[in-house]
Each structure stands twice: as structure tokens, then as C-alpha cells.
Amino acid sequence: MRVRISLIGLFLIMPAVCAEEVPPLGEAIARALAHNPEVAIADARVAHADAKLRAARRGWFQPEVRVYAGGNAINGSNRVGLQVSQDLLRLLTLNHDEVQQATHDLTLARQELTHAQEALIRQVQEARLTLQRAERLVGLRAQALLQREQLLVLARATFENGSSALEQLLAATQAHTQAEDDLWQAQGELHRARVAWAQLLGDPVPTDDAIP
Image 1 (tube, rainbow, N blue to C red):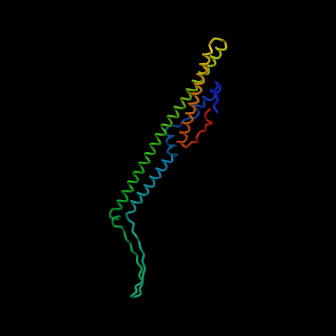
Image 2 (image 1 turned 180 degrees about the vertical axis):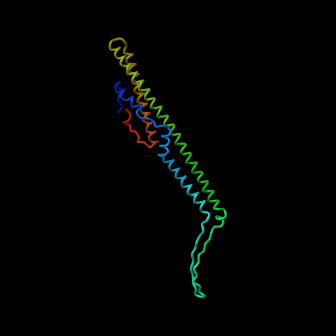
Image 3 (image 1 turned 90 degrees about the vertical axis):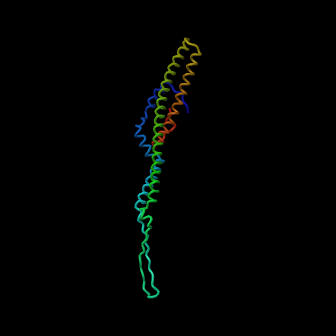
């Protein structure tokens, strides 16, 4: 529910504008990278591609072993043997084709990870600037409302003692109402900026109750 802000109420909410400190950019980026699911997925793909490449480099020697046993119908003897076969192309090329494909896959996976990280870093930078601008705007509009409140008190006093016309009091009242609306809008923008910031860093998301 919307509540009109009095002069005393403004003194109470203005310190809250700067109550939350924005962490340094490097720390914020590190926390966002550790929390972001898209970066985690891309990092897992790199690890998987790297494992495939290491397996391909070791896989040039893959002999196929077969054990056989049987009897000779002519002399009645039994035979047991071991047969070993190897893909000569894999052996002679040291598994070149598979290694080449695995290397290509790893390169693509690393590129995807880099793109995901760079995109997230840009998001953090933009969200941080948006949050800081929103905090400054709330502070400025809170100060503007204080001034309008003081002018309204003065206009009411001069009207009551007959020193000014009703139009001046109405104009001061309208200006005060507009300043309240401006502050309320700025507080909403600040809340949305804090929600976006918390989501990027994996922090608890602030509720609507945080808006004065």
C-alpha cells in the first residue's frame, strides 16, 4: 500500500538508500561466474571435451583380444589359443583422425565458455552501473522531496496568515505531490535493480517490503 511520506519519514528512509554497499567489481564478477548455470554448463563441456581428447591421444593402441578353444576331430586333440588384432590405420597414424576431431571439439567448447563468461561479465558491469545510478537517483529525489516539503510548510504558513494566495498553496501542494511520485518511481527502479543484481550474484532476492 502506498503511503505519503512526511518530513520525519524522509529522514528515516534517506540513510537506507546507501545502506547496502555494492561489492568491488572483481568480487562481483567472481561471485557471478561461480553462480551462473550457463557458465557451469559450458565449463562442464570443456572438461568433457578435454577428457575425450586425452582418451583419443592414448587410444592409438587398442588391440582386440580373442580366446578360442576347440577339438580336432581327426586326432581327438584339443586346441586353445589367443588371437590379437589391431587396427593398423589407428596404429600407424597414432589415432590422428580421432585426436583431430577431439581437438576441434575442445576448441569449440573453450570458445563457448569464453563467450558465456564475457557475456556474464558485461551483464555484471551493466547491472552494477544501473544499481549505482538507481541509488543516486533515489538520494536526489529524496532530497528534492525534502525541499518540496519545506516549501509546502512555508506556503501553508503564509497562506494561513494571509500573506499569499490560495493558488500559491495549491501550486506548492502539487509540486510536493509530484516529488513524492518521483521518489516512489525511483524507489521502484532501485528495487528492480537490486533484484537483478542479487540474481546475478546468487544472493537472496529482496522483497517488495524493502521499498519504503
